[in-house]
Length: 350
Image (cartoon, rainbow, N blue to C red; front, side, top):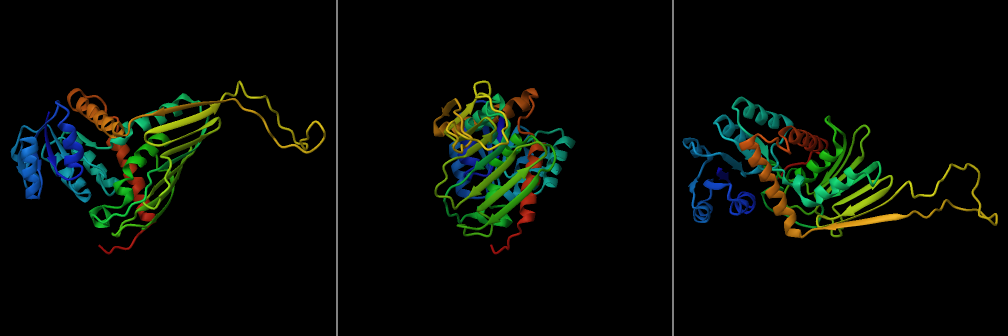
């Protein structure tokens, strides 16, 4: 499959380009990059043609897929233009600023009979697949709360700090945990949302602290946090259920649960509890806990997810296999992110 990459930054070169160098199903035949030194480097590394503007791709008929790894605020307009000119497009996250922009891309793909996909590889991360499998097994019982933390302590001063560039933690990091959260919530409509944003350690005008609470009828509460002011971040997921709990990071997870069949039989007692000697007693029982664990190598978390995403995209384009992360799901994600921003207008100064 012949590929063109727009952008040779950390995403275009170090994620997509790095994957294509290890996956012989894809061949990079063109790179678009406005910076001359990056174009020259791409020509050496991929042995491909290079262009300063993406419109120069329109003279070619041999490109099967364009990877849009341009600036975040350019993702939607460039993707729509590419689709209208007959290209299949994979766009980086965030796909757009608003749900309507995502719908515009969906409509352009449908009108031109082209493929439109969004690079949301975190759905395929090994730790998330394990979290999902534990939840699906039912051992934790009915799930009450899912807490997700994409936290750390960091200061940032690049374009990703600026609102005009569609920067900030929610548009930049947020698509990963938000995609996972909405997948677990499994609710088609707009959930009820509380969101608090703040600027902590950023040098720009976009947020680097986000707290989101999401609820929906007959669904667990989702507590999602993205913070650059957490020097003691000790878990990515913590899930509370009626029969047990899961807690873990992206490399190690453990969960414990009890069996109702093995638990002591209890009935409600409304009179004061007392011990055998008549003294006051407190509800106390001994549950038999089963504890399990899982771990993986850190580097595998990312490379496995990227490979799995491209497996699905490759089979979708060539064989019609359904996309696992659909544009409609991404549209819901962006609708939630946009609503969070509407709830937290921040002044602009960069």
